[in-house]
Length: 283
Image 1 (cartoon, rainbow, N blue to C red):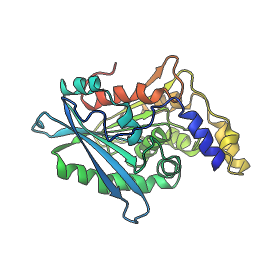
Image 2 (image 1 turned 90 degrees about the vertical axis):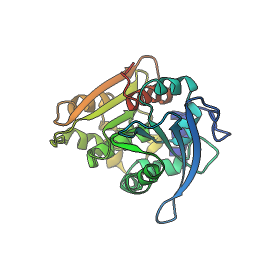
Image 3 (image 1 turned 120 degrees about the vertical axis):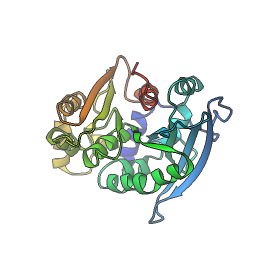
């Protein structure tokens, strides 16, 4: 596990520095920021929600909303010029789902929540606790909800899409670590789509300099798992995007960032994700 955590830190080494204050955007012209703590029903998991609400009044249908994983790092990455772009369009409520830490990342907790058997519990937390909390505080357009995640967070977005495609209308998976959870790639390739008359916008991204990390760094002692992880193709994200785009109820696009590695895709993908949530065209 220690080797695995070291490898994850290396993967994310190009990501933002620590967030020392609640928000350097407290004086934003366009958004009000507040922080709330949240405990899971079993009392074992502790989360930090940084919520940014547009200063503009909500439209008749309610605000769009974007839920973003690795919320501590998202808060460190936001830029006032991005918020200005949102304000000029249909600004969404920003919900940054993080952890009660001073750092940007809690590796053990994000691994538990975003991968494996923990994903069901975490998706239930979003659906049953976080969404109702946000909807109590703001008028939300339930027909315009976005989920964004990067790396293991991107993997969670893919898992959640396949498990509960009705949960969000816009799904943005940045550099999803499909190699780490090979069954997600296989399940995605076997997915039949959703024929319910509605369309889901799915955006999958990766950097051109990305590649799978050394599988040995994530070795759990299982030769079968090592073999399965090694078998996931290097261009799995592109393959999955093209496969999903052929299915009913799915409008899927694939974007590759030239010259960017895994960590650098965090900020590069966050900006277009915010634009999608605000109804702006992808850049």
